[in-house]
Length: 146
Image (cartoon, rainbow, N blue to C red; front, side, top):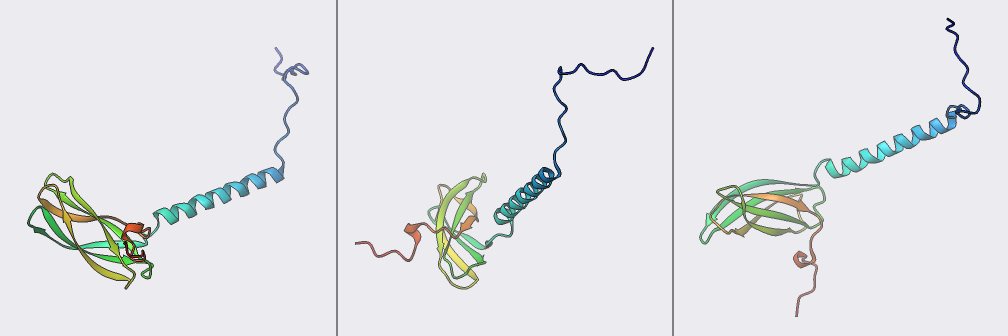
């Protein structure tokens, strides 16, 4: 028995493919690095340090299932208005009430107080989130309605 490799029949399997050229490998590597850099930049913009940070200061129950809630807002851009969504929580942990609060331009850190109406007796309050995208109906720049 012979262990010599057998030749493949000609034309049956097509021509062997040539390896990728060095230029195409460099291009693919550059595109991969560019795509990776873009993904990293987008992730940093969306998941990096928050441009608006909040800290709960105080909360106190009021009559008629309402709660006075005070919190501090620290903004990266204090000359820009912001909106914060705050909520009151009821005993089972569910959300009993929610409110949007305008934080006008001002100092970098500001203390804000508001009253949140709830569907049941509230036991705590927190800030759901803040944004620089202030809805028109909360904006202080709109002309007075007639």
